[in-house]
Image (cartoon, rainbow, N blue to C red):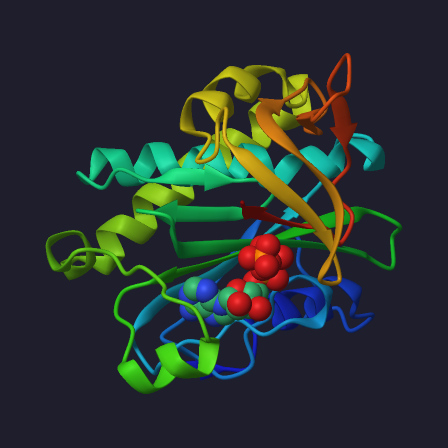
Length: 242
Ligand code: ATP
């Protein structure tokens, strides 16, 4: 019914030495109300009680650690394609956001933990806005999007569909990495061909035309005056339309 963060809960379970709490298989934890939702780099993901679909999937990750940077992109594709089945068209913002009409509808946060048996687990956290009270909107400080009422009505059905798409995505990603997702991501790219800024803690690092992602999930940016595109890694970097 209520918890601080579904990601935090599952990470603690993965790392727990207590056998009764440890996870033996992929596990979904969904919360009606999340009181301490997280974004990247310690930022907050804010939701009103019962007004968001907030859940995390813990998955024993069977692919090399260095491929993990591409996973939020594959998960973004899974969310976008599932929402399309519910009649909701969305776009993807590199590296980890789902937009509707340029506003953030959903966020993805992937964190990892190692179990006592040394198995690496990926915890895939997703928050999708079902409604956004004005007061919360002001607190977030920029306009956000929420699912249309028709799609938000049956949240269990939506959650079930997202879960099956995610499980399939995880398996496909473990077998073949990002390859199967690159074209699909680029078709959903919110800023394809547009001028954008790449920011590091508010400071502009690069400016140029966003082309799309490459085979390992880096953003290809045609900088003004540069002869060939540069490839940007998703550290704690933010993208803004110019
Ligand atoms: P940016 O959007 O600046 O590139 P980011 O993609 O790294 O940052 P995250 O860290 O994933 O963003 O998410 C946290 C940010 O999302 C917050 O700083 C806030 O601006 C915004 N935010 C928080 N809660 C919500 C919400 N429910 N809906 C939409 N946006 C939100």
